[in-house]
Image (cartoon, helix red, strand yellow):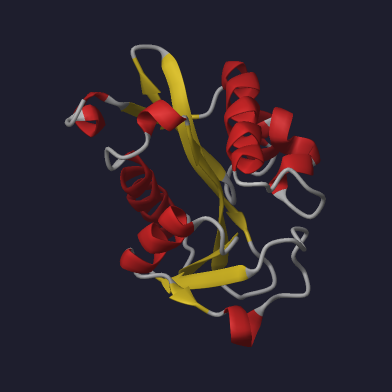
Length: 168
């Protein structure tokens, strides 16, 4: 399905998406051995993303990718108070069947546009060195690794070892 991104519908999160997105996130984290404390695997809002992102609609947004009614994954942004004018890119996860077609890149680009619309000047993200494909996508997309310089003490995800930022 080489032209998957042309057929995928991108839309704001709805409450019915919550169980699917939680399952997709946990599956991906477990697949890479990141089903451990200090990762998003144990985030209390993971099963209620629509509530979390809906709680501050002027600061947070979650974008869902759907194909023929099937939730394939999504990505979010939320305020990141540790850095002025900064959003955090959060919970970019896809089903395995949706990987390799450019959907992750499309989601990243669209959420960056949304961050700009919200007035954010930069985007921060946390990831893990074992997620090589994601790291490659982020770096190719203009994110700069700040792991050795700016590892934030405010991070809830202490198991993450890579910290990147992009100026919008």
